[in-house]
Amino acid sequence: MFRIRRVIDQTLPVDLHAVQQAEEIFRSQFHYVPAEDIRSIGDKLGNPFRERLRYVLYVAESARGVLLGASLVCHDPDLKFCFLDFLAAARGSVRGGVGGALYERVRHQAAAWGCRGLFADVLTDDPEKCPEGDAGLTNASRLKFYERYGARPIVNTRYDTQLAAWGPAPFLLLFDALDSDASLSREWTRKVVAAVLTRKYGDTCSAALVEEIVSSFQDDPVRIRPFRYVRPEKVRSEVVSPQVELAALVATDRHAIHHVRERGYVEAPVRVDSILKVLEGTGRFERVRPRSFPEKHILAVHDKAFILSVRSNCV
Image (spheres, rainbow, N blue to C red):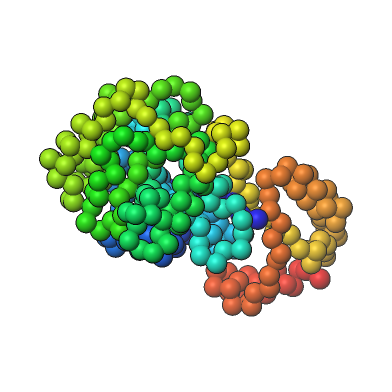
């Protein structure tokens, strides 16, 4: 079982650790991305003015806080679109459904913000344009993943020009209509593409290339590639509500009975069981096995005299 939560910034140690783990996952799976682009994720979260985009990081965590996957998405409230920067599950993760759960959370958030669509860069699945051996098969697998949600590449444009010197192959511009049947207008799409190229690729994409790519969007409405890997009737295009973030629930029978000499039993064991039954029935908690820790942890936050006083009053 895992939960998905949003990381606002890296102020708290737990969020800083999540950002660092997410960066490691992205670094291992997107080796062609410049190190600085991944290393700056924490700064992007805390500074929406950096690229005039609001960045949001979602992480999928186990009950023990181990990161199983992460997604980074940016939001432009003026043009009303979202752009998915990264989405990846940790290598070797034995838990299935992490990538799908993360993408569904991103789609739900984009829809909640009132976005007209969700865009993403995906390396081309054309084997003739993939110099790295079986990279075309890997890219095809990623495109198949997105097709399950109805997201497909925009075609008949120059966007697949190799935008950055570090790209191992041309990028396709993916579009997810977020369960809308509205057509993709040329005017709005051109504004979105111009914003993406200038803000995200400004260091490697010249003004002349930006103009060339933006002008190449001639179709109105913009054309979307037909389904290639998934039958249309199998598409899960509906934007579903995100999974409830489960809270950890720790309880031990060693504290079921506390006896204070002056008062007798102040808590009946049956009351503890009744509370647990109600909490677990809500579906909002995940039962976590309690662990024993040495006394030094208690003494680190409590005075020793206080601990001895508590012991003297308990049996």
